[in-house]
Length: 475
Image 1 (cartoon, rainbow, N blue to C red):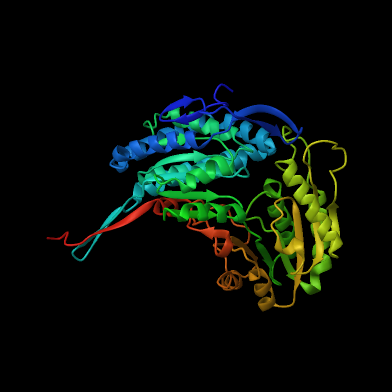
Image 2 (cartoon, one colour):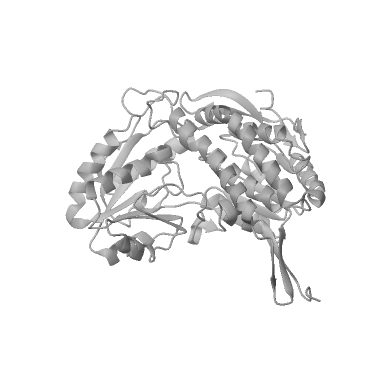
C-alpha cells in the first residue's frame, strides 16, 4: 500500500505535483478499500521528460540487452504472481480463480510470447542496394483499461520495450492497483531510469494530456470507441501514430452442421467469461431459425448453471461488474431489451437472488432478438447474451457483419472447410473456429470502429517501430 499514493517516474516513486486523490472501490462491497493519487499535466510533463531523456540511450541497446531485461521482468512477475491476481480480484471483482488462471496468467504469457518474438525478430534486411531498418518510434503513451488490466498493460509495455522505446503508462483509475504492482515489478527488475514511467489519473487530466503531448511519438490506447475517438483527435495536432483496440459486438455463428448443444452451451460460457467484460466477447449468438427455441433451452440451462457471488470464493464463476456506472448501464440495456420485445429467457433486472449489495448482474439470455434491436447493436459489457435467428449461411454472414464494430467473430462447425469458408467472409480482425485455445502469437486488433493496429508478440513489436530506408547502402 506504500506506493498507492505515488507515481513511478524516472526510476523513483514520487508524490504528485498537485495533491489529488480518488477512492478505489471494491465492486463486491461497493466500499472504498484504498486510495490513489490522480495526476495532472505537471506529472505527465515530468514523466514524458524522463522518457524522452532515456530514449537516446535505450533506443541504442542491443536485442540481447532488451531480452535480458524482459526475462528479468518475467522472473519478478512470476514471483509476484499472486499479488497481481489478488489486486485484480479486488479492484475489478474478478473471481479469484479467474484472476489467477486468466487475468494474471495473461500478463505472464504476453511476456513469454514477446520474449520469444524478440529472439527471432528481423530489425533490418537488404533490398537491392537499400538497407531497410526498423527502429524504435520513440516515447510511447500507453493508456490501458480496467477489464483486462495486466493483459493490456503487458501487451503494450513488453513490445514497446522490445522495440527499444520508452513509455509512460496510464492504467485505468477504476482498477489501478494491479498497475502499481506491475510498476513495482519493473522497478525490481532494474528497468533503466526513465524507460518505464507510470502516472495514475483520469482521461481528461492525464490521458488526453499524454495524447496531445508534443514530446510523445505514439499513443497506444485500449478502451471504448467513444474514448478512442477523443484520443485520436487529441493526437492529431502533432501527427503522432495512434494504435487503438476499441469496442466490439462479436457474432458467434453456429452453423447447421455444428455439434449444436455443445456449441450453444460453450457460446454462453464464452460470452459470460470475465463476467461479460471483454471487448471480443461473443455477445450475439446466431442460430438457424428452425432451431432457435432449442438453442434457448440450452442457453437457459447454461446461464442458470453459473455461480454468481463473492469473488474471494474459489467456487464463484461470475463476480460483480466493475462499477456503479457499468451496473446502471447494463440494467438500462436489459430493460431496453425487454421493452423492445426480446424474449427474456434467463436472468433479467436486479441482482441475483441472495445478493443485496455489490454490482452483481443476473446472468441474462435474450431470445428472438432481431438485428435492429438495441441489445443487438450496442456493446453491453456484462453477462448478457442475445440469440438471433438466421435463414441460411448468407443471411448469417450479413447479420454478423452488420455492425460498426469488427473486433472478433466466432464460427462453429464440425466441417473445418465450412468454418474456414465462412471465416473468410467475416469483417473482423480475429476469427475463432470451434472455440480454440487462446493464441498469444496471433495478431489481435479490429476492423472498422474496433480500432487499428495489431497487438501480441511480433505484431505488437512491429507497431512500435518506424521504418527507415538507407538508399545506396550497398556502396
